[in-house]
Length: 71
Image (cartoon, rainbow, N blue to C red; front, side):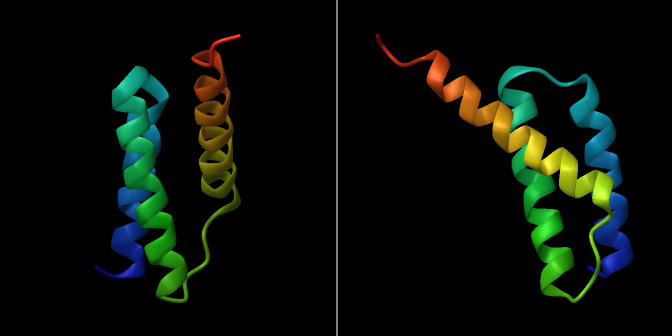
């Protein structure tokens, strides 16, 4: 895949993530993260809004993991 293809895929995933919940949202985030890593690996620049979305989703997943911890 070219960098342009990966960027289009990432933008498509961004739209799907906006409406997804639960496990589907997690799975879409994993795909988004891989796409962004592939863009970087090919020497492309990842748009700031996609980087921010990736970081927000990581934070969300970390928070969710603490919700399940026994007290």
